Amino acid sequence: MKYQPPQKGVLIFLAAGSSQIPLIQKAKDLGYSIVAIDQNEKAPGFLYADFKIYHSTHDGDSIIHKLKKLNLKFIGIINKSSGPPVFTSALISKKFKLPGIPINSCKSLVNKDQMRTSCKNYKIPIPKYKIFSSKQIRNNRQFNYPVIVKPSLSLKGKSGISLVSSNNKINSALNYAFDNTINKKVLVEEYLQGLDFSLISFVNNKKLFPICLLEELNIVDKKGSVMPRGYRTIKQKDFHFKEKANAIAQKIISKFGIVRSPLNISFRSTANKALKIIEVHLDIGGDFLLEKFFPKAMSFDFKKLIIEMSIGSAKVPKDLNMKPTALFYKHNLVSNKNFEVITANSNKILDKKILNLSL
Image 1 (cartoon, rainbow, N blue to C red):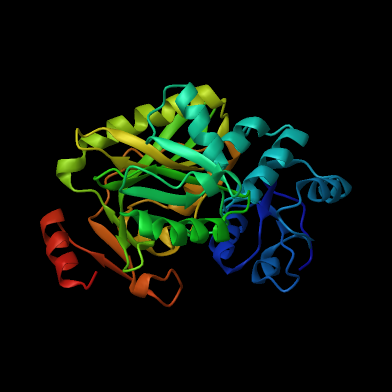
Image 2: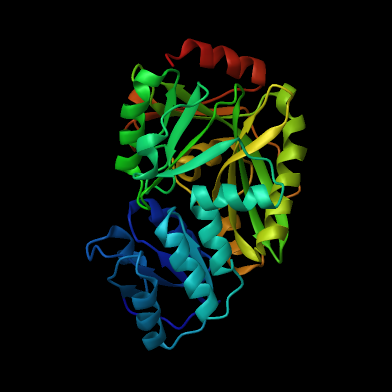
């Protein structure tokens, strides 16, 4: 593809896989030039890029070196992946003086152990927890059951997580968590008997722009592993959680100094209708929400909103009401051939459709 001078500016895309293509195409349609970065030289997103960097998105320093050689003025970064690419995005933002997330805050929020420690210090609501390394856990295997065991930092969402109800199953759960952590730490935390929610939002100029609050649909299999089954628009009786989620999110923005970023937060409700933070994500996210769920549920162009949020020019649509919608993954797997999206004209009808599905 012959490079044309940027009409509106240059955007950096961390990764160029198939899931990035809809956003890359939208950015091109809106008049932006694209620098795509991926270690796979055959990544399909490269077909739409003006500049290509063949490198792992986990190696921020090397990427910055290659970006400097391009001698371009960048206006924003778009990243859909959790874990190390979030650190890379923070490093690039700092180097090229783009509004973003302080590197220390990034590390504190992406690592679940550090996030819980920081939130505890800031009095942001979290479940009771303990952090263990592989050496520490050997002599600390007595807990107040039931508990949730999970990796401190994983590359794949919902991987390595177990609900443990008795001491005879704790060893396998710990091994499962350690197999899926990339920072050699695991968390053991209290089990909250409530619903799971996910706040989809953005930050611009240190201000929260909430888009929607979804209910996460998760199940526990026979082995105790917590598996994702999808998302749904929240029921009317749960609307009161929106204000609580937004208030907690704004406190995170303030305490961690976030200037510009996607901000997706997983919560779990408690018996007294409070919310506690489970995870914080500083990326666009995946799980086919962008590609399949939001187009059915939203009356506005969410991809365009993402692009504009990444450069700080977005205006949130006045009508954020969502059509009752649910996204289900079949057989506990998240893949592009393994989901179903259903919509309805009311939450009552959606509830009936959900009951007809095999969860």
